[in-house]
Image 1: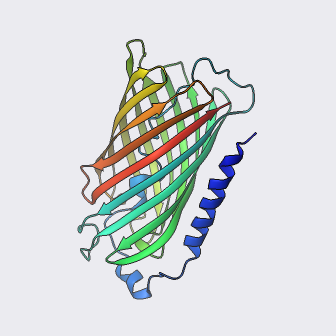
Image 2: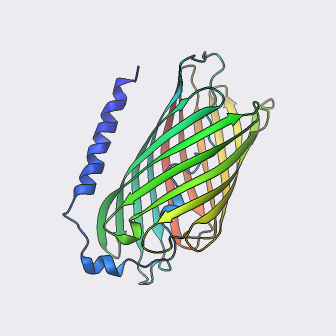
Image 3: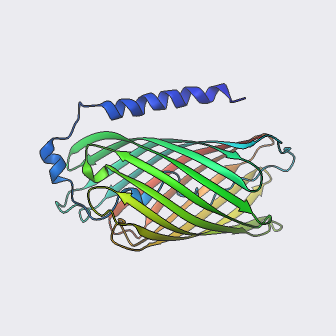
Length: 297
């Protein structure tokens, strides 16, 4: 049965998002919309899903003494996210600074055993500030990730996703569809620590006023699992990104962060994380803070 406390934050969050979408008190004028249409690159190309930067790496282990359910649903996910990015004066031709904040929640679940299907629904309320003009909006999407574990160390899958960003600013009003092949590997944890890595090759299809050409994105991730206790793991990680074409906001950048994973002797796992972006041409500051939970059945 679905835990009753999950429905309250979700309902509250949906009301906030719908209120932001329907808000007209800070609507952007037609002149301002035209003034802020042009920019270098695609905004949604940075987050590519508007969820924690480590999500492509993280796979919370099931404590060994928790039995595996025979039911169709295996896991339930509930993640909370705060993210902020600040673009430098080179991003807009007008030379003005732009800021973008997200307050998000991601719902998800896993169906099947092996292979299985992960389904995630990210929803975020957004605040946009460009040249002193402020606007509120929302970001929503859905992701499907069928995957197969070859053994306890190697797995692969294909992720199909769609994300939509709503704003009166044309520079933030856009969508992104994608399909990516992923393969991951993990070493043995016999020595109190181990590593995990993931390679991803994806084709992305943005849709907006300009820079709507499809592009390829190649991502290589590496993380270290420090098992401080049987119930506690410290997980620093890094991901290097390379893109092709002119649509994406930058041709290469680095994601780096750390996550603290708490795995009590119960069906629930929890993690706290912080991540940021570096070596980016247009994003001056980019940070994410998140609390993630996973419930096993």
